[in-house]
Every structure is written in C-alpha cells, then in structure tokens.
Image (spheres, rainbow, N blue to C red):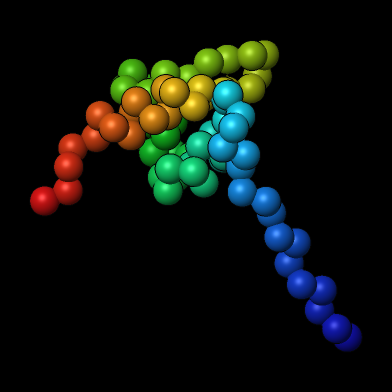
Length: 71
C-alpha cells in the first residue's frame, strides 16, 4: 500500500488584515497557547467576531516589537 504524501498547507497571506490564532502562530513562530496567554495578559489585542478570534496584522507586529531583546 502506497502512503499518500501529507497535504502541504500554504503559509498565511501576509497582505491579510487579520489572522486566526493558528495563522498568527505560524507567522510569529509562537504557539497558539502563548498567543492566547498574551491576550489574557492584555499584551496582545485579539478581536472577536462571533466565536472567532482575530488578531490584526498591526496588533501582531506591535506585540512582537514590544518583546524584550534576546541577550
């Protein structure tokens, strides 16, 4: 039996205005749990539309830029 190759997923479109937690995690290199924790701590602004959580591109960039520099 031949195994089918795993489906390749396209990276999130950087021109989008908002991202799901999964997409924001893929773009930032952070896990969804870390992003959710940052929203809980009010360090990252997430927007709600129904049950969906959306992170605006500008808010994600601002959050990443606010992180401490590595030493």
